Length: 254
Image 1 (cartoon, one colour):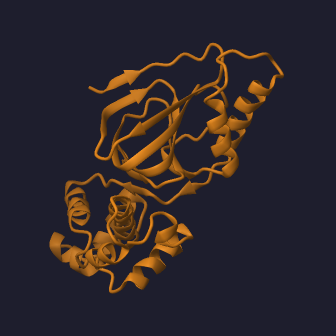
Image 2 (spheres, rainbow, N blue to C red; image 1 turned 45 degrees about the vertical axis):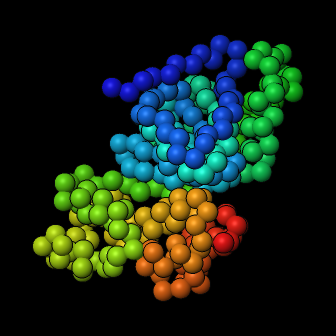
């Protein structure tokens, strides 16, 4: 049974918190009685829930609704800034786990909130900062860094194999042969259980592996080849297509 951390919101709608993690740190499964937004300034955080896995790259965030059981795994030196948010603060807060884009405005508001007092006067600057943070949370953009877990045992095992050996050839036809089913059957069941095409799931799994390894200082070329890409440029093209930037914009090239 996971631990539960309880927060009270009698004087303000959210509680800011700053914590730095060393590489390899973990937080075992736990949950909060409130919503949580974790914003990473550096390093990579892997979030595990019953619904699947999320990878949080630098300068992005992860949203966890109240009561979501989750565990954290840290890669690299992670500087995290978190908000614990009263689930009743707004009626339209995000209802599902998601990795999100953190706007420059929201980033600065989170930093500013760390210096605010717990109690404030109505109409004060402190109140406006708290309320603007909630406004910005409502319009955060979701990013494709989620690996949903299938429910059937055979597909769960297939996904474990992909995560363990992401550089292998995971063409749909070859994966179907492993399960002794047709490619059409695999495609239909995989989409029904995860919401993704198998090829898209594999691509995400490779990207999330890449983010974790790059955060540990591995070279882009080494990661590219290990993940089955023919060249550094082919991997960089995939990275840019999904993230909008080159790998060097996340981590220095080695």
